[in-house]
Image (cartoon, rainbow, N blue to C red; front, side):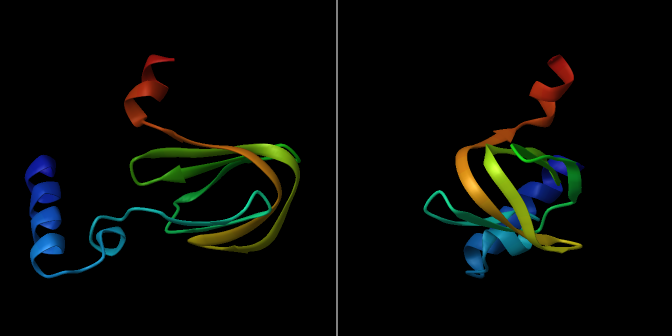
Length: 99
């Protein structure tokens, strides 16, 4: 059932020319160089430190690594992170269960 729902959402997004992030609960990530990253449509903060930010997504997690991290804005579904960003990694639910 869930696979059918996802396929239907993709079809609707493609045929109605709607943004995929809106229809499929995908995160929207805007990055300015290595200094700022703005993330919309996340499901919550799992871990935050000076060198790491881990967010829960609808499907998996987002891991951001770097130095000097400061959360400039944090709202229920969006945030702005500043600092030196070295890596942005998507972690699939399946990978997390294996490890």
